Image (tube, rainbow, N blue to C red; front, side):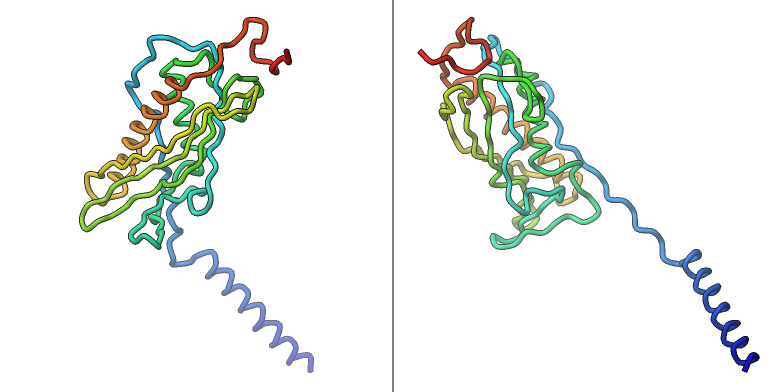
Length: 220
């Protein structure tokens, strides 16, 4: 009986050692980490000739799935989304779009101050946006990067919507490679930023009283 148990334990030990060796020396390569892409702030933006006295806060855009993710999306059919493999945005689409707009508005210098919704400061106005498209669209051998948002400029004192509009930009990619598609997204972002900045700068707002500053609105 003892010899039988000894043989069983010996066989089990051999199996465990062999299993450990296979785990440590697997023949399958480790998967490569995905490439991480940025949605850059546009370069050489036109600087505003005048600076408005209001401070502007840019909120993180609203977005539903699949836009609220880090996936770089393509839409081969009107009813289907696909994600490019082995690559992703550095953060979710709402965050990279917010960061791009903040950088663009600061470069334009059309407002006294520009902050994002993660900052603690008070501002006079808020730019609220909703992403309605953030994907590549292919037609045959051509691919275009499409970015679309619905925007509202809100008075933080009265909570009134001062201006609202839809913005959509579509930019062709040089070819169907992921590098060309990402570059097309960057170009589309630059054009979108220019449109939103011009629209926000043209939106009429109430003047800021020297006594009011950026605090709560005073009742008459």
